[in-house]
Length: 98
Image 1: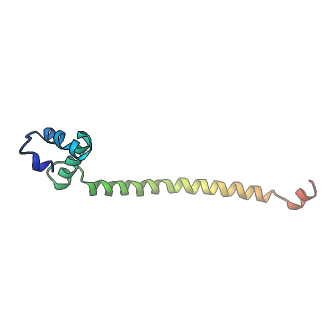
Image 2: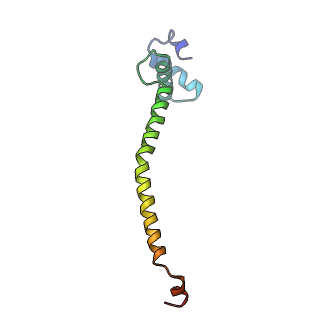
Image 3: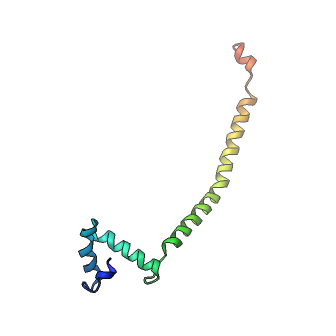
């Protein structure tokens, strides 16, 4: 819609300011949407939406991989504490009051 009205409003911002109230958003939001469409179409430089999703998934995987050793360490430490507490536990001593 913005691209269609660029002939009436030569600067992009003028077209955005004219159309934004008609669709119920602020001009800055509409401008971001227009720029995103231009990037996805290859008209404007930047990271496409699909590229950003791939980067996000890749970062999530690497973050999870980085957390695995920390999780294992905490789990092992917790198991050691649990084992020590069970190895010193005597049900007979606690039942006998000792």
